[in-house]
Image 1 (cartoon, rainbow, N blue to C red):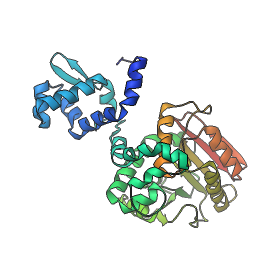
Image 2: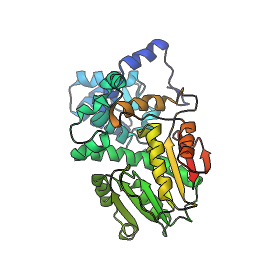
Image 3: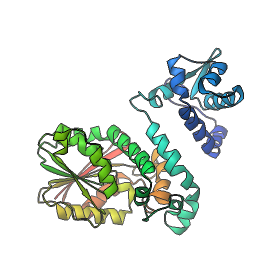
Image 4: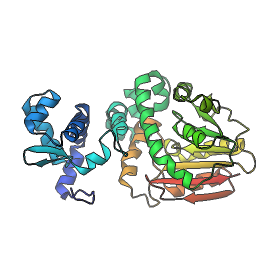
Length: 348
């Protein structure tokens, strides 16, 4: 691993990493389960014998784990001691600002077991991988209502992703003139709480499934904030949207649905808004050419195989076209907002 943060691999090793991807993931997940990176950091490195003693296993399995982590450049060896690599310090220690632990958890507990059904999901054109999560409904979001612990893991990751990505939207849109904002599919309310904290005159309504709005409500600890937050349960495609809102936030929703269903949902937003009202579509995107990023390419199969059976990581051009097709006459687009996000603002 170089100081620039890049990892250099031969073509053969690149293919090995893909072929043995499940093993690579489990090496990282297992290290996290044993708190290995935190232990290495606290002691400024540990020997093989000390690692085995610290995590409570024999030296042979500890040696296997350390060999795998070192081969992936996740730990390095300095003399007899193993230490964390820079990328682990930046992204896998719990106090790191870019900590990816919640993403690792949702991959391990919710997503990975379903991805073996990707090919069959392509053949059938639906989310065959959902069979691994029993319960009511035809989407992952509905099925999670029957699994409170998995739902908590899922929305912990979504909330974490929202906190990291959402701050950039404030650089491109001034919410000070908004009096009532609807956070459509607002999940655990992370974005709504942040906006309500920043704008003391703002009322926020979180619209999502009933069990999710209960979760969002439970996470509001400030009584003053709770007085300005509403929780409106229902199906996004059928629930009556509030008619007194002057802004709708459409955040991390676009990738879930087909382009046709996104346009339908955006039309519902258009119909609910008054003249001059705005809909802000803020989403993780691919590039317009359909060749990347790597994150977009790796995340998209999840939407087909598990989440909804119809979505993917779309391009900024796709998002802009859907907003226009929904009836918004004044549309502006801001690309490259960090975390591979695009903001498209439609004004009625």
